[in-house]
Image 1: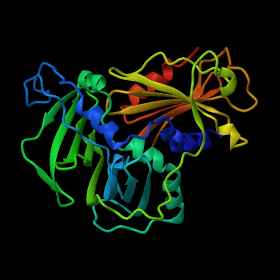
Image 2 (image 1 turned 60 degrees about the horizontal axis):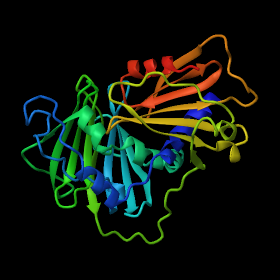
Image 3 (image 1 turned 180 degrees about the vertical axis):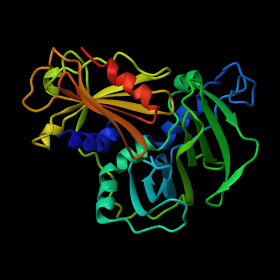
Image 4 (image 1 turned 60 degrees about the vertical axis):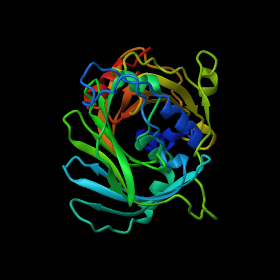
Length: 344
């Protein structure tokens, strides 16, 4: 039961994220205010009075993008996934896997049917949550210093600018590679607090005028609604526990309820709370076990364990006999602290 919820939650997280359009992404990115961290301009700070440049998400554009996504495994080896992203610039997109490999190699293996099906189920999560996106101006200004590298680079035959965002709370750097003409993100790198690259994406081919006839676009797996308490507890089927700690710089984006019991007989509705610091996103998922109508007033944490799925750390366990999951690309000690703070 617990593993089913974890896999389902990863596949459904993107249902809680808005689908950006080109105009929306451009408006948000262009309005980001300068982040004055007190450090020397040119060293992870935004020069005073200078706004951040326009940076667009690939799925907000009309695009055919072939790309390589790589993630560092627990064994210290990178796992590589060859992907194709298609988007119509109006909110529709799909992501497919066409090859994969491990270690230092240019060869790619044909993905199994199981892997292809897994991408089909998780594509919305991978595009909207795994891939990096610029958030709101206030979050970026408060939480990241910004640096534009002086030299351009080439990616997929396009001239690109590069930008580094350094977390003011020590969560690691984010580097974005942006098409100089279209302002679309063609590559990114995510480093941990020790400066080790843990995830990266690089475009190998891009077409801004593709033929999209006959494309089957991604669709949400289940319905989702905004959650407000009190009032929506009855629809959800339980009252979510309170989250009493979030990492520095993170603020709540929204609360949603995924109405899974309308499609899955054995999987109750899920409550999701999303937090962001402007670039990274973390989620807390809660669910009442079927047949368990009351939380346990006795022991607080029954058990907890840590795992990693698709580059995202996961702490899952039971709090007062209620399944709880904390997911995010953050140090495990932060996720454990969030988990331990959840209670009445």
